[in-house]
Image (tube, rainbow, N blue to C red; front, side):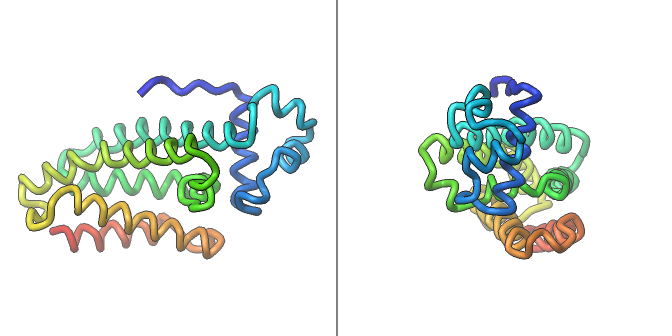
Length: 195
């Protein structure tokens, strides 16, 4: 993966766009609303990003880069596949608890209809999760920690689908429940199902 580079001002714009997405959805994220929130003109906004789509693409690229680094570090610090699985998802729940606006960016069906580039950015995020999860599942199956009665790819689809559903539910509940606490329960439930 190539290095992700962004200026401090672009990061501020991305964070602000994420907060608007969380509050008002994709229809509320306009360059006019974003410029008002940032307290500068739309033309100043265009000096940093060419379009609303480019802002969303950068938000997703930031998330992809952060996730790749973070999950790599989380997994590396643990010895067994079960510990690695727990660390990987704990890291995700911790990140989203501090950055709930990224949930809207990564798990919004409306965003996928915005552009091919945004669709590709979302696919890259999924690929990062897959990249880190596949070796954990395969090693766990070889060592007998996880069932080998289900193909590793199918197990990943089940795990990622469960994670996506939980994030969607959290978003629909306006982020009111403790995602880390509920996330830990989900991790344990998944591990029970996979053993």
